[in-house]
Image 1: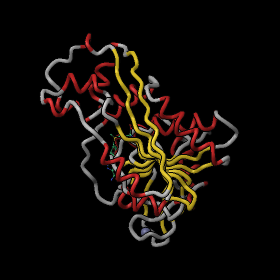
Image 2: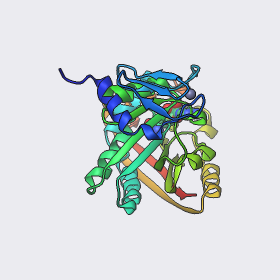
Image 3: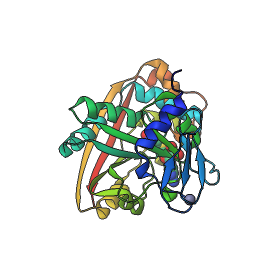
Image 4: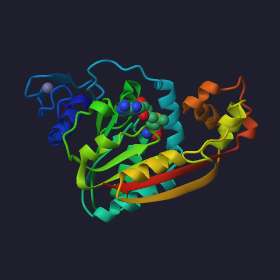
Length: 285
Ligand SMILES: C[S@@+](CC[C@H](N)C(=O)[O-])C[C@H]1O[C@@H](n2cnc3c(N)ncnc32)[C@H](O)[C@@H]1O
Ligand SMILES: [Zn+2]
């Protein structure tokens, strides 16, 4: 009989169980043959059938639901973000070794999968990848769509990982937790934070916001904060305007909480292109 998805995920998590620490008591954890994750004090977390573990000790309401994550997956699958992956992989290639990477606020996981694929295709080294998100719907989608990675529901403020477990921490369009990043990172590890810049999805914002001052924004403060945290910092700006297929317009509209400010109808014709404008901030403690 073949392995179930849950068993395959449990095996992969077991190979990397040395990164886990109990979110309740911080003791070491083991992944059992029965596909549960259990600490020395017997706090127990089950693998779900899709192959993820929920480490939340109480449910957290999230603004992000399955509709948003499905829309994000469709947009990300169109490869609008490939310049971002190239910039990140270029940086990671400097390590010349197998890496273990954590994506914090990974959502439905597509960026992490594409970064892993790009890294492994660029050379001979492997990437072991874990994604964590507080939104269960995101992790359910990630685990359903992508095997061979570790998917965890958890709060970055109480993450189920040991100190100095990761070579790289990714934080893509998600809130940061710098003290936690510092704790989780190996001494020579790197943090990659991706921040939207002024032109990011500007065609969408032009459509959605009646309010003029919401049509533009700046993330200068976020980048400044990043620079304050690290010793060595580089910031690469990635800007591209790409043609947009009509079918993708509704997904684009639903992929961000911007959708909440949606006017009644979107004029599909005026959305024939979309701009990606990101700062990729790279830092070492
Ligand atoms: C805009 S989404 C980005 C998701 C994904 N990185 C992407 O680019 O598609 C922000 C994500 O951060 C997650 N998030 C917010 N606070 C978090 C926390 N304290 N711990 C873990 N994830 C968190 C949200 O649930 C959401 O999935
Ligand atoms: Zn425990």
